Length: 164
Image (cartoon, rainbow, N blue to C red; front, top):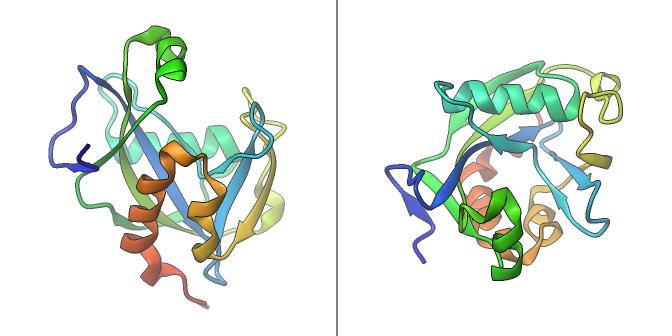
């Protein structure tokens, strides 16, 4: 399976957008999935019809963490995809897709931690959140998404720095 593609494949993959959110100290925001206690992930979700990927990433940030007080740092090169395990693919999204193809963005968080409200959002997806070192991000994700997260860590690692 090729991890990157220049063009999205909406026939086989659900199109989505994701946000790697960096703190001022260079750490990355991760949330513990509400449906899988041992899985953490970064904010991500589907792209609505007619929505630009960057707008979707900002919307997902607001919907999942309660804040979009950010500055965009970069857009990942190409689209990244992952395949779901067969048993999960049969259930997720009505069995229509084999996985997700996502456009990822790096953002710097400009606010204070008190702006995050993972429980007060319309549809909570996380039970907890924390800042982690970028080197720990990929090991926290479920195994089938790990290559995608490793690619993001490699691409965006230069943003893991302390800023004023």
